[in-house]
Length: 249
Image 1: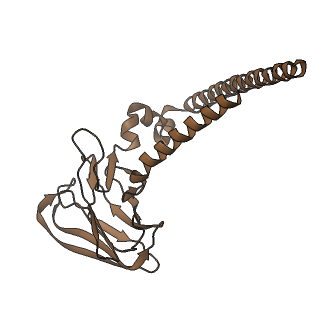
Image 2 (image 1 turned 120 degrees about the horizontal axis):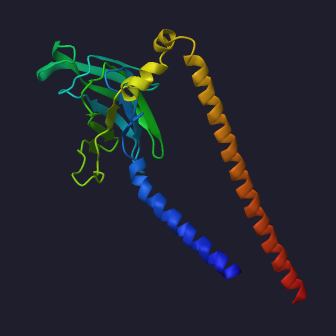
Image 3 (image 1 turned 90 degrees about the vertical axis):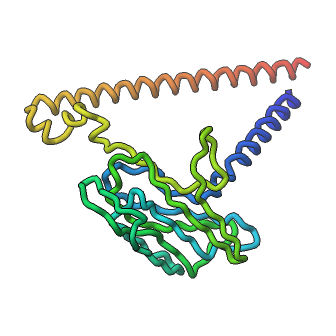
């Protein structure tokens, strides 16, 4: 019995170590957080930059902004110990916005310098951007990370065709449809204006649905607690049988 437990524990520990080992490279990537935002809206994003080197610190971070789908308004949040420079200039070619406006200039990049990200640490550099394009699924922000030893790591690799992760993927912000559009007619019916137009019958129906959900949740909780009690009883019975056998032995 004891050897079996030890064997199972060893296998579990090995599997955990392998899982963590596979996850570590992804955790070390430069990323955009949060990773999603609504199309056509405004959002605050943070470029999360971890230091991957044991013998050098990160001293410069330069983020390039998209020029095929430029962001008209960009503002940055100060970071203690760091200087920030927002570079604005002409686009490679004019772009027509979702509203029909012709855009010839936009923010091209943001550069943070003067600070340090030591080994085993990370820093987040925040920016408020918008309005986001309405008909685009994602925006990429190629980033250059410079270390104190002169090394420059370019996070600019596009996604691979087979769906696997690139070695140095570009930080990417995924864009999703606004919630009101996803809900369609149901979302419109649940909106305050629709409720007012529908009359007093709308509110009671919502309350009734809420009560049904609560009852379903209570039933599920009871089943879970019952299952846990059964498992605990079986474990206790097993322990009792084992003790009885030992006493007879």
